[in-house]
Image 1 (tube, rainbow, N blue to C red):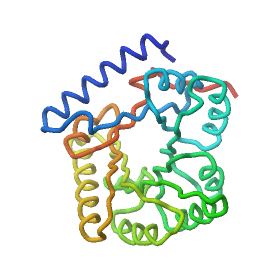
Image 2: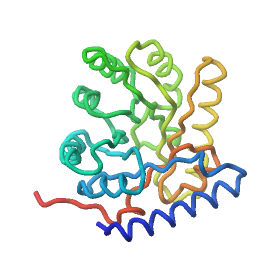
Image 3: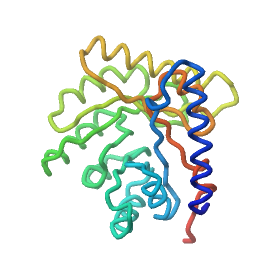
Image 4: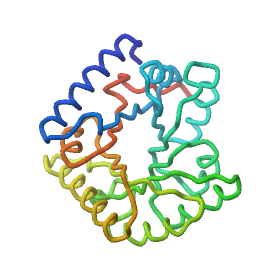
Length: 238
């Protein structure tokens, strides 16, 4: 992993890209948040984010994140908020609800039932985003486009879940317009849901290092960036 000086330089470059992308489509760069993705990196990645003024980081796996949370408690990152951006299995929902401030990967009614049940047990209103496979990528998790509306209806009926928006991951293929179509589809879906359901869904979590420009053009309010900030991922020996 990079040192803090290199992290600051990378962050400055990233903010430059965000500002340029926002300016190109007439948006205020302040309306696009950066979520540092600390998955597979040591706890120092979380500390770096805290030192740079970030309030939240993203993690993919529940168990890895829980261990990192414990390590962070004795550092300057002790007040960090944690967002789960990876696929969540129902049998991990209990720990996810106990430890994460927001779950960005709610993608089924079954998982919504489990999250609501676990949140109710501890008196918590669990903040979530609905993950939608808006690019129809068979290799990606997320509710299919046709499942999105009934999923939202189900989640809105839950007493212990607060849905704050939608999340998507662009397809991993060579077609240059695949990411753009996926992001435009998510934005259109969000706008339609807000109008028809009369709810506010302000967050559109979409875009990573390789596709953040078209995500911002499509209306992203949060980009998720890891390797660009921290360098190559860290895989501890087993």
